Length: 150
Image (cartoon, rainbow, N blue to C red; front, top):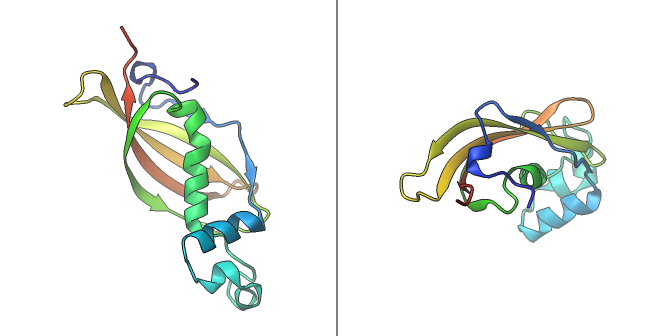
């Protein structure tokens, strides 16, 4: 287990996750087709050449899922009871095939669970950043996390 218990977190704690990931054409193709998304900006290189981006733009749901996935090992692995919600998902810059993303997470809120004495609620602000140091995706994730066993 590498995730932290509720008591191990403080507001302002920031984690620079060690895993980085270069986005591949296969990543984009798989998520786009698995979700039945017919958007030509994600699938059709000739179409994408004619857009302001000049190339295929990676499906944003992949970027979001990768950002959250990379965060798990150092935040909630082995201590998560449930993710309660994802809010304020934003994608200020596009992601392109070949971009390498890294992720940072910051604790922005902590509170005891009102219904479960063995749990606490932690809200993380996640940021995905490309190799040009541009933020490409952000969100907040609210997670119910185990308290340290007695």
